[in-house]
Length: 450
Image (cartoon, rainbow, N blue to C red; front, side, top):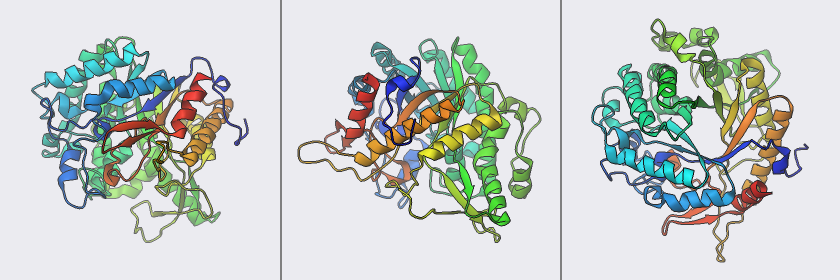
């Protein structure tokens, strides 16, 4: 399929999984209802200067109260799967110990409503909203949080495992750990590389230890993890830039992929980390490499890297540079459908996962609600079409992709950006909480019903 031909559903296998993705903190609201505890994002939003528009997730899309209409919207598109995440502080307000049954009951209702609409529930256990009491004890830098996660995973999968048969342990450990504990732009706002690397290790360890537990509690379930991955290129053909791209790839991609696929942490990256390398106990790497049923991949943009000999951008001595003259989203991210092909074929070549699920892919642009009640998001519609065409090309090259989940069903709370960025294929008028399908959403529905 050429890069410019609009894809058709019949270009894909009949059993291909088509979905939309959401996450708890970004859409649910009801921040202090029905026994829910405080999360690190509740706390982060309360700190001045953390969120660009000064907003928070207290109401968000009010999905907690409006989920039936949101699931109706998803069903109307013709998707057959719905990816959501569970808010740990709704289930265990203190992170561990006392279970809040009202929180479990909410997810009971949510899952039952999906099944009633023919939507296959894909549950993510951790999409960044750690209970604040655990953060007060070190958060993911503390090994105790691994056992707390297992307690949480046990409670949730015992309750929902009879109906939910697809489980994702973690969403994007790079973001929760590196952006949260090193770059300081996500909760909890830390700025220490050693903390970030230890957090990464504990997140991966909690994933690996949770896999057999989930399988025990949810008979026949498929279990995986979702990574944010980027195709990486050098800014020039110089030996220095090529080496910098390799170093950056070590931290950005291989740091997660290598241990998950049984290779341990990449030696070249460990050497560069030096004293910031994590403490790894005997047996940890074996646990992390627990066999999974699929790898979730979130793809948004490629990265181009130049040598940074002074190390001013971190120990990998690499700095991101922008390619000139390329299309960009409202976030400034390069639009590169070919990057999706490059990434997926690389993952397949180097790691051979049995199944890949494209668990997020999407874009943000300056959406405008017209006086006649429409959102003509031509750029997002084109983005969606071209990335689906690219996905088909990757599959033609032998990559075992079995599903595509558009990010996101709804405009929502976009973390440190607040409500300034709209990723939805449905527009949310936050003043009234009206949902309005954008042109991209209308096209996706036509594509799926084709």
